[in-house]
Image (cartoon, rainbow, N blue to C red):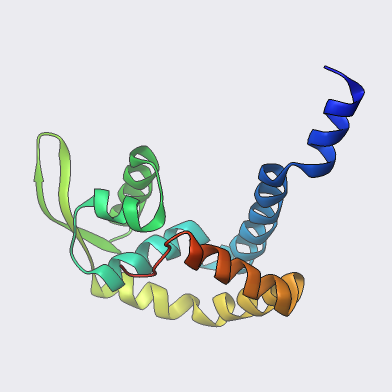
Length: 146
């Protein structure tokens, strides 16, 4: 590999930059939510389930663009805390899950810290960055709660 190829990848790779931004924002939110014993990934899963309503885990994976194993692992953690309930299951696992009242209360309890992290993330990205992120997500077909 030539030095120019290395320089091109290091200097221009969009994938690495998006991942760096994603990790920085995830760390910001996770730090804010740490006292609640929940991660931003889990809060987003709870919120998506609350928006979509009772559904199959695969639906949550589609909505949040998550792999099946990631959804399954996180749902098991949410179930352990009583934040979701299994409405139906079979030998293959959970067929339909729903947000519980305890899960709804968990979402409400994290809101002050989530809002603080949201403000910090917006400051970090700036107005142009926030608009760009929202525009890109919309352009890629991300429709919250769809």
